[in-house]
Every structure is written in C-alpha cells, then in structure tokens.
Length: 300
Image (cartoon, rainbow, N blue to C red; front, top):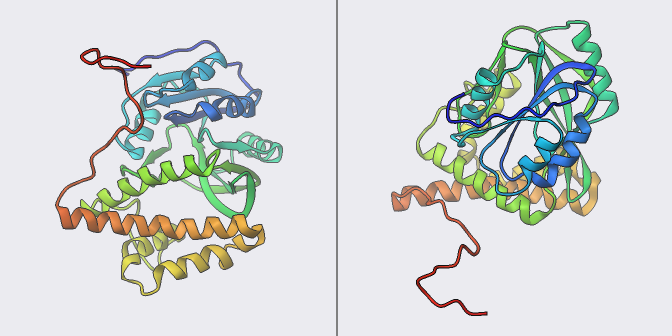
C-alpha cells in the first residue's frame, strides 16, 4: 500500500462477518450517519479517500474506520485497489457508498444469508431518495461477496462487480440518499457527465458486452451504446423514468427527478459532441475563491 497513509483507531466489530468498504471525496455530510448505520453490524469498515477537503477523515477516524488515501484514477481502478490492497480479514466483503443506509430488515437478512453460506455473492434492492423524499424506484445490485471472489470492471465510471459463483438475492431495502440538495446533485452530475463524455470520445470499453438478448446488465450496455441513435430518445427516457419506473407516484419530486435523469443523458451527448467539434478534452477547473496572493495589496 505504497504512497498511502493508513490509520486504524479501532472500529468496534459488529455481529456481521463482513468488511464494509467505501470510497470517498468530500463526504463529510454523510460520514456521521453512515458510520452510525454500520456501527454494531459490520465486523470492520474501510475507507479509501481521494484527499477530501472537508471533515470526511475527521469523522471516519473518530469512529475507528480504517482509512487510506489514494489519488482517484477512475471508479473501477479505485475499487480494484481497495479489494486487492486493503487488509480485509472478514470472510465477506461489501461495497458501500457513504450516501447509502441499510434498513434493519436488510441487515438481518444479509446476516442470515452470510451465516447460511448461501452463494458466493448477495444482491439486494436499493431505493432512491431525491430532495429528501423516497422515490418508488428500485434497483437490484450485487453488493456482497465472499472475500477474494470479486473484481471490478476497469472503467472510469459505472464500474460493475464481477463475482465468481452463484448470486443469491436477499430481502430488505437499502436507501440511497443521493445528495443533500439539488446544488450538490447537479455538481456531481456535471463531473459524471464529463467523465462519460470522455469515455465515449475515447471509445473506452463498457462494463460488459452490449447484447440486446443478453443479461439485464448486457441489455443496459446495449442501450447505452446505441442510445444516441434512437429518435425521440430524451422524451422516451423521461417516460421510462416517469411512467415505467413509477416516479409519477412521488408527485412533483418524481417528475423533476425523471426530467433531470433525461437531462443527464443529454449533457453526456452534448459534451461528447463538443469534444469532437473542438478536438479538446474538458479542462478540470477549481471554482470559487483561492488563497490570497502576497504580490498584491489585500483590501477589506
């Protein structure tokens, strides 16, 4: 674990034989709640931090989370580093995001599945929250596996776990509190759409083989590859989120979420086309004030 700084101030082991692993960048607004959510349940908790500027590390270390810092080089790269280099001792490993929370039912169901040694991986349902309200939108995700049985697709964004062996689905629900407010959400989507546009321009490989008649994830990759060829694609995508996924049941909040999800795909296409037109990749910028320059007079 060269060029990393490790800390271990003593996480109090919980009842579940699982190592929970998170990655972070400026997740201070989530760390208190996520540590409390995992306390008493996870055997050990790890955090790979990409040099946060807020109090992410202060909170994590106060709870005894084992923390390392490493420059971010893409989601697949960061997760593969975590699985390979972290000193995980628990028999099971769980991928977790700081903005996610486990329900008591899900904790119990996951514990039972791990104790019964069912399969090599466990999948679960995640419920999306937006503007402080739950959406009637569910995602089925593989999030737990026997330690050493998983690797991630080496992609910049939308990394996907590849687990060797049978996957078992468990009951219960994980809540995904995507962002504390819309300003934070939009800033995050701006970074995400830029990364996706660069990947598309570079013709980077997708997380799985795109196949219309393949698995659900392969069908998703096929749609992602061919999305820009579809007529009325943004309106159809809005209808998919609004009607098919049932976001309409959340009222105006669901409507706003469905519209914004379509706008995210529009931004990816527009940024991709901008790169093709200009021949330049986007430049990373720092917004907001910096430090005072001692070469000029400072005024109150």
